[in-house]
Amino acid sequence: MVIDFSSHSLLKIEILISHGINVSKETIEDVLRNPDRIDIGYKERLVAQKVFDDTHVIRVVYESTHERLFVVTVYPGRRSRYEENQV
Image (cartoon, rainbow, N blue to C red; front, side, top):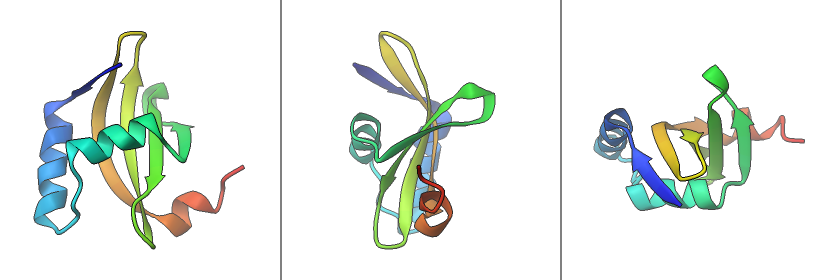
């Protein structure tokens, strides 16, 4: 499946890297292909999540069609916030 990145998501990756959070397009693709969890977010967009380190997860907001995944944005979150409510 093709994975496309919005210009906003590419900017977010650069910002995260400038803050010492080493996220790459390959990392984001791995989150989408092998998520630990998928939630429904704002505007019914999907949010894939994967453990990033001991205290953080990476969350990827995306839209899905039969032919492609479109990454809207990406952001880190605290594991304690996003993992405690898992079913």
